[in-house]
Length: 353
Image (cartoon, one colour):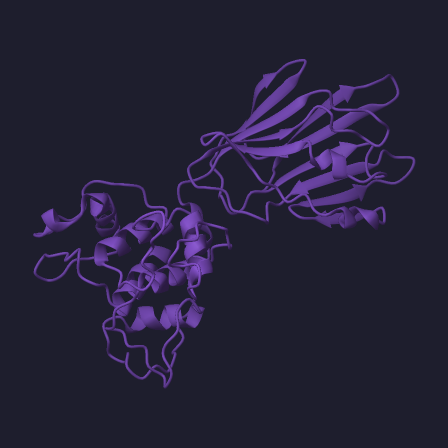
């Protein structure tokens, strides 16, 4: 998210010392301006994984910003919860050399030379987390935000914005297609999924077995599928739910990350079934969530559609409409059948396009 237009707002604290704030915001609209607050709205949804804000403040970089950072808050309006921002450690501010500080999600740069006003540039890069897709957020700077000369903003500045629906897959979708690399696997030559297997193995999202085999027609477990999705979509690690049967599992961190993003869920609050072979309907649900595909009508009508579980019907419809997951030649979907490694790789590579 790049800031293109600027609005210069001045809070007059005295006849000789104004505290000036330059706000750079893309396609911003002034919603409301009053004596106590000023509100802007970003017109276009933003990529949840690429949120970037920049402010320029006058009278600024002679003091550290530990206290001021507490005045910057990000709130998920839909869920009524504050998003935790990494504001750095006290040690980040102790050796400030008068030029730049980088701490957590923030970067601070001093600009301007005496006798010109010093500009304190503050950038929020949001490196510590990825926002949720299709959500409404507000970003606030509190009225007690203070310049080095003691002046305060005396107003609350607020930016309203939403995130786009593609969410966790957006970063992968924006990446240029990679040239297929031959992996040298012995048992995929001529296989219907050969190209998809080569692509995903080359990316590092999935690997073969010792001896140079991939075993494309073997089943794939729920833990394996969750792990491949996290790697393929390049999801940042998150602390999600730890199920009783995943606490000591090799894939516990990837499962927790997928759960935190809302991609996977357990059979219950305690049981995930990590080593159970994944079924085709389970796979459809997970891949639509990972790719941020919203429910849609008009998907293919399979001859065994009545056998699809109620919780999976919208996902199967949406995935089939997008061409991510297909049925068989006899027009069946076989929702309860166990998915093969080749099928899993194919739906993931299709979702990444």
